[in-house]
Image 1 (cartoon, rainbow, N blue to C red):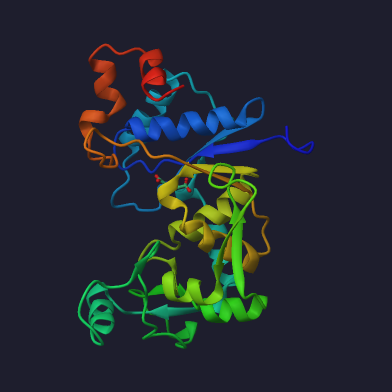
Image 2: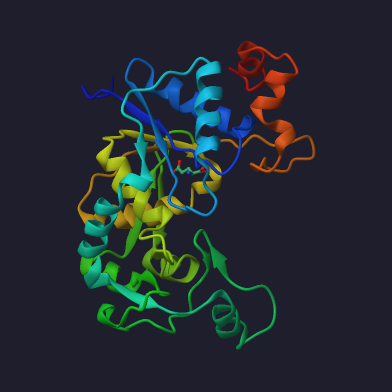
Length: 283
Ligand code: GLU
């Protein structure tokens, strides 16, 4: 309990592969953080091309095997398109359709100078080619982007920030408006053919699930600036954040879902017990 509020945390896997050690760690951190509160599960399956129901079933089975148990119902992002549509509508004054493909963006960015292209937590920093196009002009192949400059102006903000329970606790992590515009830029709110983006869905769903503490890997730390900006635009509360360490392999590389050797399934097949996994992850 914190300030009389029940702690609610969530584990939000995308069912694009088997549960591996990195996911198991994220799930165990979220469950531990919930303590006597509530631990929720959210299936992030907006990318219909990459998500598979059999992976979702395998993930749930591994989580149960690890001793985890979550509050019902499970939220599934593929059931939530109506909520994303409503949020996009609310963001209409700060958004525009964009028809640029990755190649167009690369060309526009590379034009002035050679070298590495500027990228942030949402990929390449969009050079603004389509900014100002009206939403009524949106074609079926377009993405919808946030006009970040207009968003900051509407909120009359010159900085955005949040606190993290684990990374310099008690200290505000801040980006100025200029740092946001230069280092993150006009992020995608709705991807081609998906009706939302990760950033929009996560913000809408954390509120819908009444999540009080978002626990997730440090790889998403910079995305949190985007989420806080969207929460302000949508007038949603900002939860507490705890970005945890990433589980790396012996060579220091972050585990990706493709690293099947680290899949919990394989440890199970080799005779590991749930306690072995807990121990390996430092629990
Ligand atoms: N679905 C994301 C992932 O698989 C997690 C998103 C989050 O925790 O905010 O990495």
